[in-house]
Image 1 (cartoon, rainbow, N blue to C red):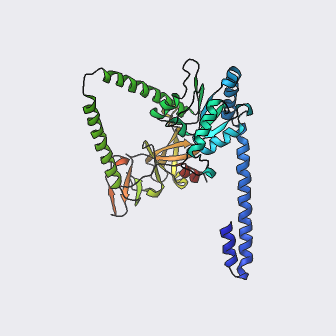
Image 2: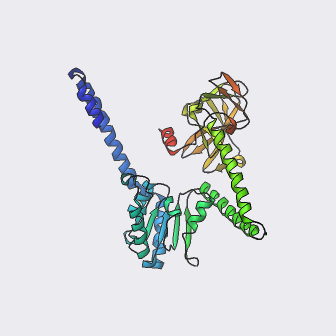
Image 3: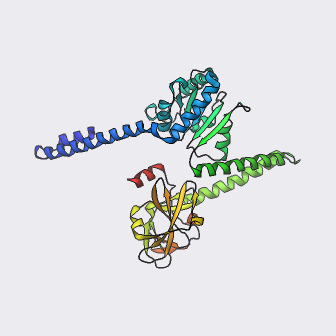
Amino acid sequence: MDCKNQRCSRTCITQRSSCTKATTCMFQTLRDVFVDIREIGRNIERNPDVKEVIELLESEYRKRKEESRFLIFVKTRATAIALKDILPGYLRSTYLTGSHKCITQGGLPTDQQMAVLENFRNGEHLCVVATSVASEGLDIPLCNLMIRYRFRANEISSLQMRGRVRQIDEGKEIHVGTLGEFELEEKNIKRQYLMTKAIEEFCQFDIDISTAEQDIYQREEIERNSKTLKIKQRRPALYSVHCKYCGFLITHGNFMRHVNEKFYIVLDKEVLRRVDQKELPKKRKRIIDGWDKRCKAHGLECGHDWGSIFIYQECEILALSQENTKVFDIGNDKFIDCRRWNDIPFTIDEMSDVDMDLYKL
């Protein structure tokens, strides 16, 4: 707003009037946005998931009273701060976040992190809402209830979070999330079991541990170097994606993203207008990491299969089929032969929260 005012002040008098009107209109729009954001913040209390969390906390508090030590894991700083503010006052809740962001962005310096943990230990705070910073590296006091609220984790992070519930006989771990998040956690638990079993079996062998570790490190180093080299050889997105059978242009490379390298999507709503969506049979519908596969997508003009339509965060997104598409190298003016998306010599970024926010606009 200051920048806009300075720019208007440098314009001539004849232009300043129209500039001021435009600025006033823009400022009013911004104020309306701020009002909407504040209203969304107030509406968090009506979120059924949040109500469920509060009911769980109230139930456990009635049993434990001042012996309560509750830890809630959330994905973002904003969620930690917002959730802390609406929890019951008798829990004297606070939040715990990482220190690599400034305080105005929700970051906590190391000394404040230590103060939060000490206050949690002595009962000044009965509940801490934390981001992933609390899952490892910090000495968390005894915790008798751990809630993971819409928090996706791999098998290692999941195991570390579970380890925060130190009172084995009475401690509880509760998940609040989507079906996809529950399915991922089931996989994590199976992997943790296999990891534990493998370590037990390994310890039964009479072998030189240092030699075995060295072999493992060498193989990992080779894999890392190979992966790094492959990434360095990729070029910026100077390519386009076409129908394999007729050559019809589907999208340009700057709209391509990948989701955990499982499927490759097009973040361009215009492409949805050029496809015919054909409903999948119920037995073929499935949810993959929170992505709900709903339809097959065929080109409107060519009729060929381009991929599938997924629903994610209430948005329709096209995921391209590798076997039914081909990639055109714009710089070298030729099509390239790639059996897998990972093999194409171009950079495809992973979809970020910012990408998704822009797609929703």
